[in-house]
Image (cartoon, rainbow, N blue to C red; front, side, top):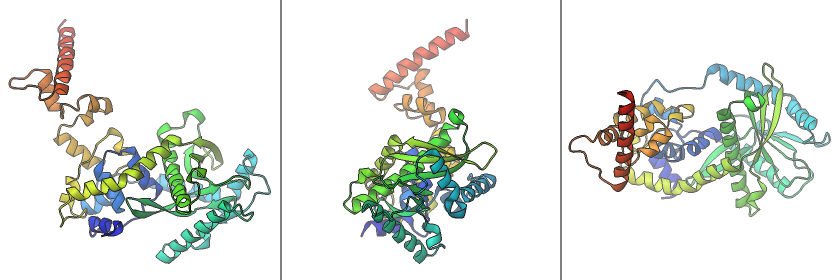
Length: 368
């Protein structure tokens, strides 16, 4: 059975989704969560899993207002043949006025049918090949290119906002459009990191394309252009970002995927699939306090963490520190030297000694 068939069997009756770069980058945020990896490899979003498999109605969805704002900003930047985007690059000196070759892949084959999507992928590959061949006809801006990203042996479609390159550059740089207000150094760092991780998925997809054709994959540099908006206006701003760390984290996640698939298959009975809620919740998760930012299953995973008295509920530092104890309840018992409670390992004995000293100091201070 090939990889695609294995993943289809694992997915079960749940329809496959296009997760896009946002869906793939979630794995890099929480690389230890096997449940998230399983859903991502299978092509099922956490939101659909929460709604259709676990039948929960408390999954966070993107704000309709934010969604409309994103769409409106994207249209403004890309309207009239991406004139506003091109003007921004010329004004910043990143493109010459004569470097005005702009192609919109979305306009080439609009629609969502299988054939239309494949046509957009084929056209994207053709344009990338022109750039590799140093053809003067290669576009300077490719709007909404569509690529395939291999994750876990299964191709996942990725549609980027745009790619950009000068005529004398060897290859394209990934561009990301976000309707976040550009506040300079005060822009939310979490928003910037998320945007950079999405761009990193695009870099990884470009590198896979290059490697498949025998080209130097590193000419797809770990850099991106981030388009934000002026506060209170739909005027775009441009930041050029280095994303080496983000690309490394995405590529590590891609490299780990085949081993993760084997591990997931070992946990699932031969008759089981991810469409079965009992199977899905049996796959280990790794709850973090920031799961709420990106994963619709966070409420379910938090409930499981509460039931297990997981140290993850106390934050990352406490989770690592109390890992030898395994649970908050066990850590408290060790700290108070409860009757019949003895350290099971040397690491647990160290944790007990440190907690006991801290507890004694706290008691002395509290009691005067």
